[in-house]
Image 1 (cartoon, rainbow, N blue to C red):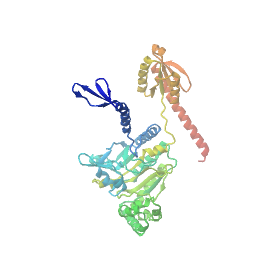
Image 2: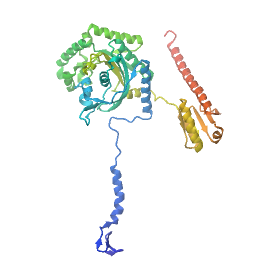
Image 3: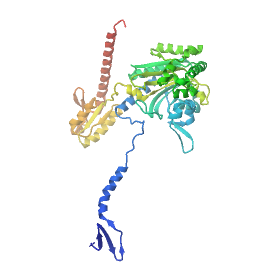
Image 4: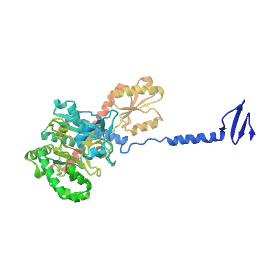
Length: 485
């Protein structure tokens, strides 16, 4: 025990006495050791949240691919007269339960459904068509038929994530409502075919086509399939035995090895098609042939729900592994009726944006047109004014304001800028800028108005160069085919 400044110190502890009172013991040793340890403990408890499994953060090259797909879709849909529409991300659960069927995997296993604070059951949309059909009825869009609608955005399904498949994914969607003629099916398929060609991914993608017939044909075929599968029930997989009771057509596209011989030997729909159904399918195929759209028949391509009629189709590829379908759709003449509306013919398709992006050979380049290099603080303010004026004239411009001049110029070349604008003390005094063509190295002093004129000439020459390159490729192709072809 040691006397210490008006108190007593024992084993690293000091008790202070003031008059008749003593104050709580304070451990200097514990204080010195505990504070750093507490900080480490606190930092260890703060864990950065991770992305939800099956979701993705789209950035860089992936985002460029994504945006290119969407912009191409928007451009092509305008060529066909489709009007854009935006739908809610969530709907009453009944919208999807009725349209997709209570017994389907999407409804029973994959939907993100929840009860909101008002007690209503809501579901994040797993597809677009049901929501569009609901909107058609609740907004009185019947007065606008025929309707040609298109949209794109995120969808949600609780599936096992794999290549090209996510729990939050994005799709393009196109629908024609109120047209019963086969011409609508042909137009939608031409739209899809042109989209794939415009994206440059049509090579290796095959349009598979089938007919599900009218209601009479489908019912007769369904009865024949049930009879066939019942005869082989014991040899079917458990999933297919369940489907036999609730959705027998889905057995035809079962992936289970034990199901394939039974499914492959099942009767085709052709033997059960009515005269009207045969004529409808013939009109579709003749229209596709007239438009130069290649197709192949797949008599095993089905849609399990009863409201599907006539045309069913998929654009498939072997370049995405097991997830080979990149665009799919069909005619759903009975869907709007299942939601409480009148009998309304309709046909549509959807395509995965991520899957289409994966098929692109290269991420489309988005070149910067002008790099602005200010020299000094005063020039940096001037650079803001110059950049604003150039962007207002529809030229992309970026200010490279920090770092050594040589490195900034190298960066301008690296990003593919067409020209550089240099602003220094002399330029501030003259009210002009140095304009440097990065392809030729030519440099001239110009005012901003002259820069804009120069850039229009430069952009036009770039377009001509691209046209010349395309013309050269075409001449080479013609030479390889020969005059006879």
